[in-house]
Image 1 (cartoon, rainbow, N blue to C red):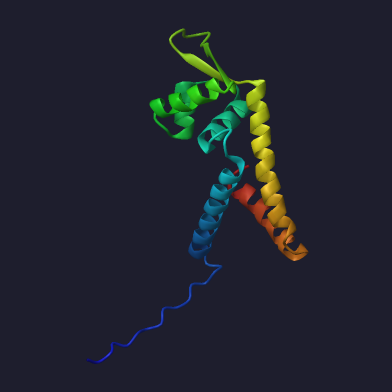
Image 2: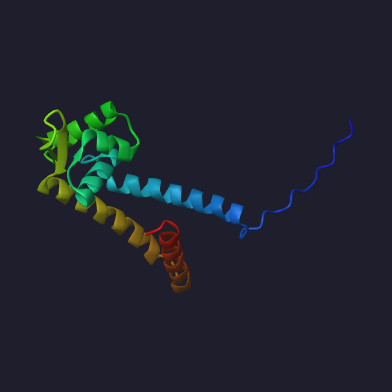
Length: 153
């Protein structure tokens, strides 16, 4: 049996927009997943964290608004909010304009646990950044600025 010749595939150009986009997407997703793990544990889940962060940033929201923002179904959001309420991290009140709706708001305890989770994430990332040399930290600093610009922030 004669072996079939193999053709060497060209190495992708790392600076090509498509290749760079794949590399960035992968790196951002992995880092994001790791940061979520670092800030979770026995206190709050990643889903609970995002709800607390949303409430902290935008104020009271209905369950529907929270579900739409987080791209989950209403029953899933209800479970998340119920767990947060059971821990004292959110309150539920009747909507002032529509008594059929419930508004959810973050409590002082919710703000505290959110801040603790954020601090854990920052500490984990700061430890990794501290292990880099000055040149790599400068590159990451510039990359962070560029990513903020690309995301419209």
